[in-house]
Image 1 (cartoon, chains in turn cyan, purple):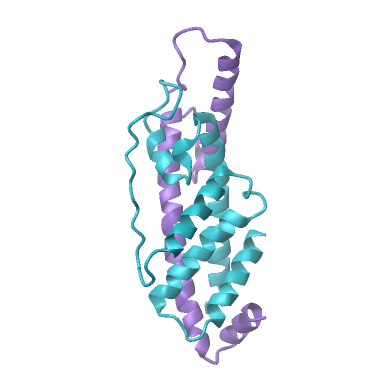
Image 2 (image 1 turned 120 degrees about the vertical axis):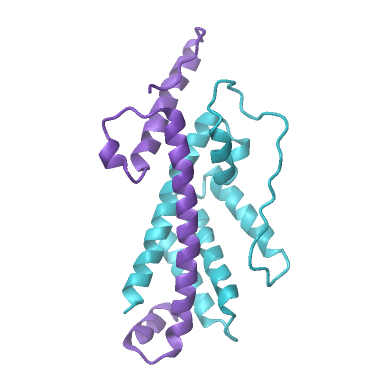
Length: 135
Length: 93
């Protein structure tokens, strides 16, 4: 599902006329990569995929032509986690996993595993495509 | 280093959650790139999370790099190479 979604998106990007600039096309491909991850049937039930889709939609509404998206680091004053003895590292992880900030520690670990698997699959897919069509 | 243990005696519900968390941390450890090497060693939860963060960052970077390369690939389909033709027929339905 993830692969199919990505290939279809890639086809749309390839067909676009007039041909977009390299930087714009790179951005579109990257967007398609994350969208495919979020839309894959396994992950669509996950909190991270909903948060990711939300983030992607927000980015699309930004001024077009932007090369880099600005990552706004929201400072969370009140602690969200309920277990005081949780490792401090979890804060970094929460920033890396979409939607991580609102999760309970246990859910965060589960979501992280799923997110990593999806990321890996996406990277493998993109690498396979590159290898198949590069001489 | 072993995983953290709470000092006070919690209820049964909390003890079960502790085990679940250990399992989930193990699962994450298995997904790390050097998992086969470290299979039998006990790694602290903190360390696993730390390395998971690094791993996720590197995966994000790979997505960026591969997007860049795929973009170049799509740009090169203007050529008459066999690869370009195959790519075109695959992608353009």
